[in-house]
Structure formats: C-alpha cells, structure tokens
Length: 431
Image 1 (cartoon, rainbow, N blue to C red):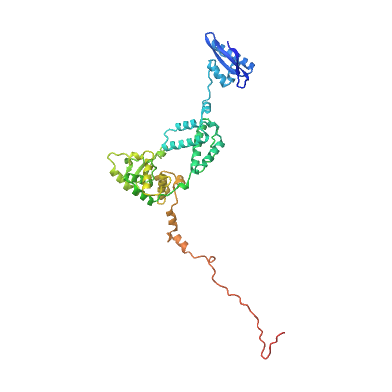
Image 2 (cartoon, rainbow, N blue to C red; image 1 turned 135 degrees about the vertical axis):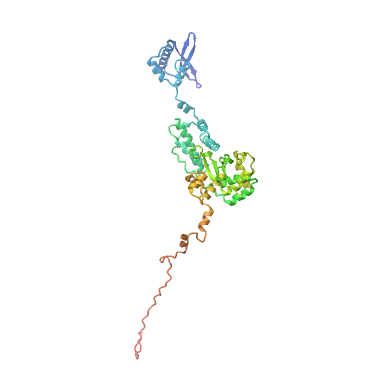
C-alpha cells in the first residue's frame, strides 16, 4: 500500500519547508518515491488515496474508477510524468508541435528549414546562410522562435537599414519572412511577425553601370589566352549567367549550321518550360567560339575547361584581366555585363525577343537590367535632326503672337498755339 510521508528542507535563509511524498511498492517490489512538492495536507492525502487506487488497479488488472481517472487527467505534467515513471499510468502523448515549440530555438529552426529544402543551388544556400547569420546576430542564438514579435521584426529592419543599402534590406526582410512562414506552417507560431513589414524595393540604381565596348576591348587585349577572352565575350555579348550557365555549356549544344546555342538554366530548372533557352551565336562571340573549338582537345565535352566552373575562378580570371588592362573595375561584375548586353539588344530587337534570349521577364528587365546610356543622350542631341518631325520643329516659324513687335508708333508732338496779328496791327503785350 502507498505511504504518505514528509521531507524537511532547510533553505539558505534558515527557514524550513515541508514537502510531501508518496512511497509505492513494497513486498517483492522495490519501494519507489513519488514526490508531490509543497502542497496542502488535504491535497496530499487525496493524492495518496488516488495513487493507492492506481496501485490496486495495476495489481488486479482492472480499470481505474472514474474519480481516479479524472484526477489523473487533472494533475500537472510533472506529477503525471512521475506516476508514469513508476509504472502506474501511461506517458502522456504530447503534441509534437508543442514539443518542438518548447525546444525550437531560432538557430535550430533555421537549420531545419534549410535542411528541408532539397536541391538548393550553391548561391541560394550561401544567401540563406547570410540571412541566418544576420538573424542570429540580431536576435541571439538561443532566442525562441515563438518569442519574436512584429515589433521585434520592425526593429530588425531598422537595424539592417543602419548597415546596408535598401536593396539588401529588402532582400533580407523577405528571406526572414520566408523563414518564419515555415514556422507558421508547422504551427510553431500563430502569426508571421514579418507579415506586415514592408520590405521595399530591391532595385539599386547606384550599382547599375553600363560596360561599354571600349572597356571590354581593352580587357580582351589583356587576356592571356583565348579561353579567357571567350569567358569575357560569353558574359558580355552572349548574356550568360556566370558561372551557373557557363558550367553546363557543352559543345553538343552549339549548332554551327543554324548559328544557335542551347543554354541550360539551372536557376529556373524547377519551372516547367524554362529549363533551357536558345540564343544566337552573336557575331561578337563567333570568332572566339570557333577558335576555342579548333583548339579544344579531341573528345572535349565542355566549352570552357572545368577549372572555370569552380566557385570564384571565373570571377578571378576577369578581375586579373581588368587590372592588367588598367581599367576601372565596375560593380556587380557579371550582372552589369549581362545587363549591358540586354540594353543593347533592346535597341535593335523587340522586347519579347530579347527577354527570350536573355532569359528574364520584361518586368525584371526594366527593374534590374535596362539602362539609359550616354549614347542615348548623344543620339537625342545630335544635329541635323534625324526625322522630318524634328526638322519641322526646328524650322517652324514663330506664331504672330510670339514675335516681338518691331513697329514703332510715332511719338505725339507737343502742339503750341501761336497768335499772328493782322497786317498793320501791332501786338499788345500785357505788363
């Protein structure tokens, strides 16, 4: 039978507290202790009675009575766990999401989200890790996901604004919103704290720069081999994404007869119909591409050697050529080369054709690629005029109301009356 007893505990300040405990078992079974804590004597006595009922039901293999079942359902998780530890009840089946919620720190949640994304591209993984680093730097590694509020999210955005440009702030807020939306899907939180935080635009016009032909020609002259020259023209004149599209460009995708190349697009391979695109072999590319084909060893698969496929090698090769050519390096090295090509093509071909060749939408092209160049201003201000409308605008006479009046009205002369006396009459003068 169960036995109720007390334990005396002396605190550091000298005061004494009594806690209740129930001893169960006995006979051939070892005695086990169920500590109830500091509770009233009546509550401890009732607990001892219910525990005895549980012991009896277990020994006889019968069901527990209704009052005892209600008591078991009402006790705290701590007491219930102690009853289960001695074998009197079955462990409670806790809600899995609640367990994760209590143990899910911010760093654990982000790691769980990144691990759930299959087939992440290297650039995407690097970007996720950047967002992870910033979130943990601001909120702390041990911060619980469910403790982040909308106010905390707003403070995080302001913290980013003090360190980065608007485009970077917008990108990081959107990724943070994505991380916390995953927590909503798993019912770790009821509402996404970043849901109502406006991210803002991701266009940074200050970093847009048109890479003109003169600079590219000087860079090509500084390249030591045709392989590096081909790398430059594929980025500048073919508009390839470097290195993702370059590393999958093989000779079997070059159609010399039709003057076309098939480009695999890893960035959009998850979108049906966007896995590849076909572009012309532009005149600026063909010379270097044919020379590379003639110099390639027999059985070569890739257009450029695999060393340029590795992270950073293509970038480093172009930077070396720029420094050797004594050309000022432009921002966003490969992105601005690709954007410069799309800007040029838009002057010669319809927009839907250019977007098909470059591999983006018109909205993306207008926001991140198309630029106004110095040549546009020179064309607009060049004389003589290039079309009849401009000629008429230049030679059109002014309206009569706009002309300066040149006619001069004669000034009014002052008229003076002169008295002429008749002959023989002398004029009289008053004193």
